[in-house]
Image (cartoon, rainbow, N blue to C red; front, top):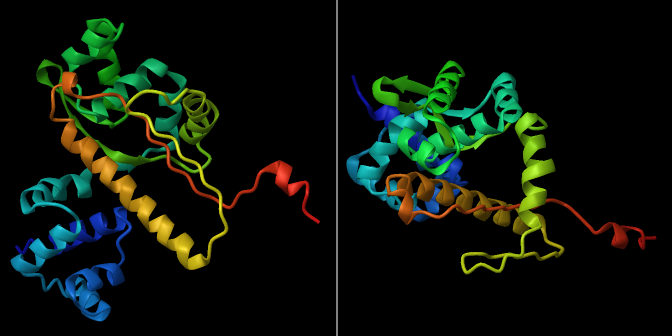
Length: 243
């Protein structure tokens, strides 16, 4: 059975996650947009063309084939019940985040005040929630994607908005690894769409780096929070001065 349709579907998913349109891809490949669409719809993809598309995605062929299966099988959005259980239990949420970032059972209990018995129970709960598949020896297979998206207006988004982001922005941002930037302006629709694509691409790149770095020892990794946001907005003090 041909694997080309599966490869094309994986490529389309990766392109969408990185904010790369068929028009963008066509320009990078020196092809017409119609030919790019035809290539995907007819599954007429050569190995050489696949390699060219991977270069646009900043992936090697090896990395692409490693990503192809998870792209199609990992959970990218939780149910309302799954989100609520995570929000209701900070410890369960912590273990879920560690699991998503590639921590082992031993690393979790070594770095956090979680007993062996409690950690096993939490992993079992995540198994019942279908966020992971628990294996013998407290090993597990991760079923949630690193580019997990929360339900708009759901429990996780409310938790992130009301608790996480407010505390995150209260920091001093004086550490060497820190960076803070704010700029307001008035932009055309073309410029807004360009900025949206770039932010989507940067998000996808950050997610991919997190996936790759998850294979490194914990001692070579640093907890980093990244916040990117853009929306129509004006300071309330400015709005009050409008005629």
